[in-house]
Length: 425
Image 1 (cartoon, rainbow, N blue to C red):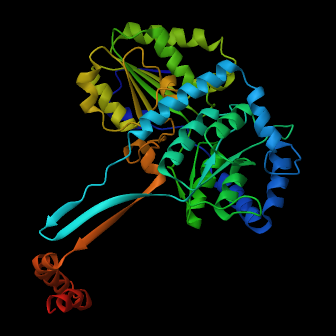
Image 2: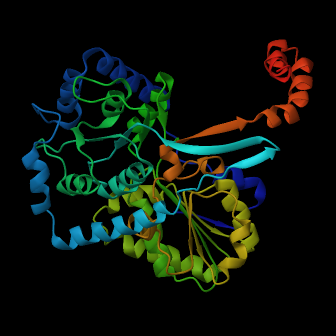
Image 3: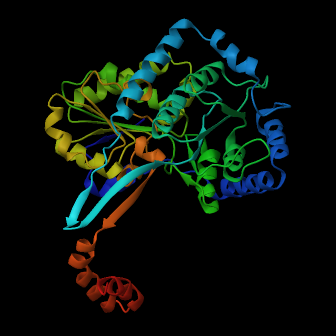
């Protein structure tokens, strides 16, 4: 853990740097995987399953029995928890549906915008050290609400050639029928090009390791959209003298345990809270099953004493965190000052885990500073917006001269003529 006392603003650009990944080598490996999948389809996926996941399977799709039996392999408590989360996530994303508004911009000129679902979307769900069945909820629910016609889910199988039962159960609960046993960059390649078994898609969603991230970026070169650029998980906490060190430490570790390349930053205006949070973080770390990941992550992390909450928010906006927690008393006063953040958690009881699982907001969020120009996944992520206009005779008469003058000024006389020929009639 790195500690800084009142760091000058000239040092902030160093403090906001994320852990650096060796991208050149990764990019070459991912390109080779793409080439292989494009050339050999399903066979390439079987080969990569053996190579990367040490599993030999005969069918990329789980059997009907596997899907049905998943319900019997998880506890009733977990099923109930997944159902509660599903209801909250549905409620929040359902509220994002917009009414069509027809606007008369000029007398006789009516303009409006309508949503159309992206027809074919792909969902990538990690299944290794942390099988993220919660991400199935976060992506499948808005996809279904948007009306996507085809939802493809790819996730790596375990050593027995099976998909984690919680992932299968959640996919079934969300109405996903097209599920495939393939992971990593090869899964992204399969959804990009399509194979004998896996349809190609128009947009790919979901988190993953550095190879999956690089694969999603490469998919864009082949005409496939992605939810957002991504990197390792991160959280930034701003705490005043009334913050609870135990709570803050728990939130820091909840992100640090994602992986060794995750980053957590703790900023406080109170020296006592800073020290106690550092001590509590070390104390809680020892009891974590994934403490080796968290310990390595804490090596990339910063604990900063800063002069004021205004300065803390200025630093946060520069960092643009995936998750921002305001463990401060008067948080409502500071909400307008938040410019760049993926998702914000307000007050001592708003743990980041609530957004990860069940409060209703989406946990697929921009990382690595991309909160400066990207939003988290929402209903809008699964739709295109198409504009419409209808000009009556009165409308073209009222607007025609304006269009003619502008078209002529740009030297586009066919554009001008498209108006003139109508005005003559």
